[in-house]
Structure formats: C-alpha cells, structure tokens
Length: 392
Length: 80
Image (tube, rainbow over all chains, first blue to last red; front, top):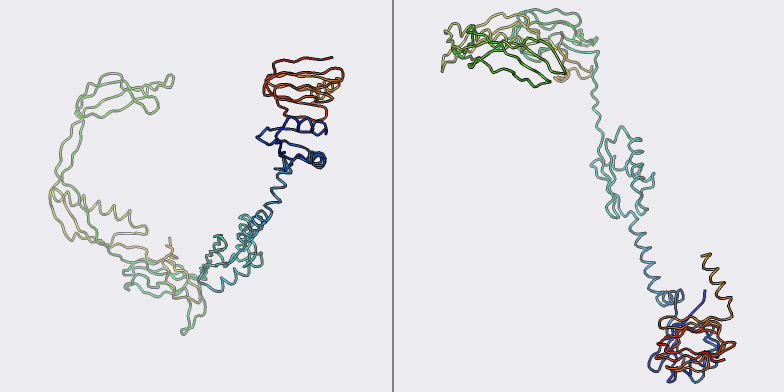
C-alpha cells in the first residue's frame, strides 16, 4: 500500500515549482492551486527528497490520506478511544453481574433451599448473569430436584437484580383410606329399616337421626377400645319429610281437529321446506307429511293439512288440585334418587288466585339415607362431605 | 478483470500515447516538461515535442512517465 501525504508548498510561481518537481521525478497527484500555495499529494518516501532539493520552499505536511489518516486519527484520539473501550467493557461486565438475588417467599427454609440450589447451578451474588435458556434449564432442574416442595418457580431478571418467585407445593397429608368407612345419614329422618352387612349398627328402627349421624360404624370397638376398622356396608331407609309447593293454571287452551283436511305438496332439500301449492286452510292448522319420492336430492312429500281450532278449558278446583298433586309426585320422583315409596302426603294449604291454583303439600317418603364416609384410622372424627358416596 | 488487464497490457505496451478529453489531456511516457504556463505548455517526448495552447492550463497529476493536464485546450501541435 502506497503511503501518500497531503502537502502544501508556499510559492509565488507555481509553474516554476511544478517544473522543478517534474525534474525531481516526483509523483504528484491531486494538485490544487491556491493563492501563494500549491497543495498536492505526494508519496511519503519522496518528502525527504523534496525537502532536500527545494530548500528555498516552505513544505508543510497538512494531512495523511487513506488508511494512514485513520491510523493517525486513532493515534491522536487514542486516549479517548481507549477510555470508551474500557468504559464499554466495564459497563458490559457490570450489566451482566448479579448484585442481588431476591427469593420471594415467606418460608425461610424454602428460601435457603432455593438459594443453595441456585448457587449449585452457578447463580450467585457477584456472578455473571445467564441466558434465558440457561435459566429455563435451571428452573426445570430445581423443580425436578425438589418436586415435592416446589409447585412453581420463576426467575425474573431486573437489571442487576434477580427475583426468584417460588410457590410452595402443599401436599395434603390426608389420604383417603378406602378400607375404612362409616355409613352416615345424609338427611334427617326416622329410621324405618336397617340392613347391616359389615360394621356395627348404631341406630334402631324408629330412632330419629340427624344429618351426619353415624348409622353403621366402621370402627369395631370393645370396651371403648377400637379393635378393628372396616368399611361399613349396609342400607338404611328412613322416613324423610318434604314440604313442596306447586302452582298450575286453571285455564288451559286445548286444540281439536275440525275434521277439515286438504292435500298439498311439499319439497324438501336439506333443511329447506317449500310448499308447492297455496294452502287452502287459512286458520290454524296441523300438518302431516307422507314421503313420496326423492329425485336429484329433492324429497317430495304429500302434505295433509288439518284445520284445528282451540278452546279454553277451565278446570274445577278439585281437578286442579289433583293435577297439582300429580305434578308434585313427578317432581319428587325426579328429585330423589333413592326414593322408595311415599308414606304419607297431605295438602297443607290450597289457594285459588288469578286463575291459578297454589298448593303447599307435605310429603313423607321412605328413602335411603345412608352414605359412606371414609376415614383414616387416626382421624375417625373426620366429617368430610366431599368424601361421601351414596350406596346403591 | 481479465479484459481490463489485456487492455492495459495493450495500451501500456506502446512507446507513448496521448489521450485528449473534453477539458484534459493525458500523456503517457513523456520525457520532460519544457515550458509550463497557464496558456502554453511544451512537453518533450522521445521523437517530438508537443505544444499545447489554451486557457487556465494546470497540471493535476504527474509522475516520471505520466502527465495529466486540465484546462481549455485550443491548439495542439507537434514539433519534430
């Protein structure tokens, strides 16, 4: 690479200077004519020769060119450049250093555990920060290592501080023991029949029991000492009472055929139905479709149109009452799964108001009330309804 | 690049060449710059002297073999 320099030569006669330069066989480029000066680019190696032969001229180096100019500038600003590089390195180092690790959880044991685990993985105070993927790997490995203690773990980097959010895994030590259970009452009532297969019967027929009372005990005791725990089995029927209210309208609109019938043709494609002929029954009608044939996806039906008329029917009070009682029985049958039979029913209150009949009725039914309640031997007093299970 | 080298070899193989452009004149393989002024330049080549008449004639670049003159060239003569 040729090293050119930009020089300035003081002269009043540029032509004679150029002739002299020409005689010296010096390579000169980019000659610029200025007042009293001649600016040009020469090879750095020619400068010495130039100065030697042009003694009477003032030769001044103005600048370097190309790569040497950059080199010169770098050298001139070396202190600033070094400072910037140094500051950048310091900044990069500092911004990648962990100053503080905050483990956010109230349990000090868990905090220490996480702190130690992080230190093992290289996440320490005054250590270097890691990449997102590395943190993900650390989270996975810690969660795997302490899967019984940690439910959820998150590492959040906020500048030079690392916040570790942790959620403790709470394992309920209550474990269902499906080998030991009582039969308890899920409703209050009077016992009507008990069939015990396994366990100790705690109640007798005609006893009144409250909801939650043990009917068949799974703990077999002798002199107040538990000898064995079993899963009680059996069925307990009791008389259970319900107060049911119902209301029905006394007026009912009933439709009947007048006997008038007209034919029509109906075409069906998919869900679209089209009537071909104009309907000759203009009042309310009931239709009956008779399938004829199908062609190109179109189904043809013969439609029978029946003229219907409606008539309002008014029930008597006794008719309304019996209808309401029927409705109550249907409701009861739908509501009760373990219903066996109706023991007693009585209308408590009856009222006719605004063409409606309102009935308040008492019903006593014979119903299976025994449900299983699982218990742990050490926690036989547990009354957890969520663990109840109906016996069928 | 290959074509460029061929052309360069062909051109620079000559004893001399003079290229005249719009406002400049390039002379290759000159021997000596004899006279230099803003209106007149005389350059010695191997077998003749080239005389340039013009206005604002200036030398832009020169080395021991090549010369580039800029300015308005009005007349170009060869003296043998």
